[in-house]
Image: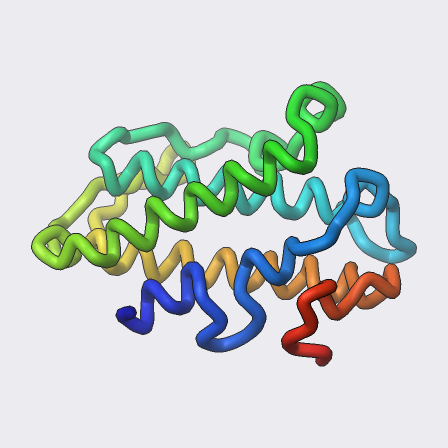
Length: 164
């Protein structure tokens, strides 16, 4: 498995995304945490939003960049429309689609258009660069989820693994 694929779906640098999300109940992912600006659910929803947008760009679909940052986080309606289990599965399926893009070696150096914030020029990067951007973004937010789990005394996941 290539290192980029390992970072996206494996446990190359930290616990795998599946492990980070393992064993969480709907009750705990919606729980407010003192000092945290969002819940675990909101954090994963945001990460999934950007993963899907990145995959659109990789597929050649120029999905517009949000006008406001609030568009990248769920409102109450979105939170009620999609269960935790559905959101988790959508995120993990998106990661596997990203891993498949890593394995498509012929396309990795192909340039793609990635819309920017309104008023800024469209960025052009390679598929590989967009996947690296995605991996960095996912790692940041999954790390936040681990910290929230620690604050909620819900870490490590049931299967064990990284305890720090």
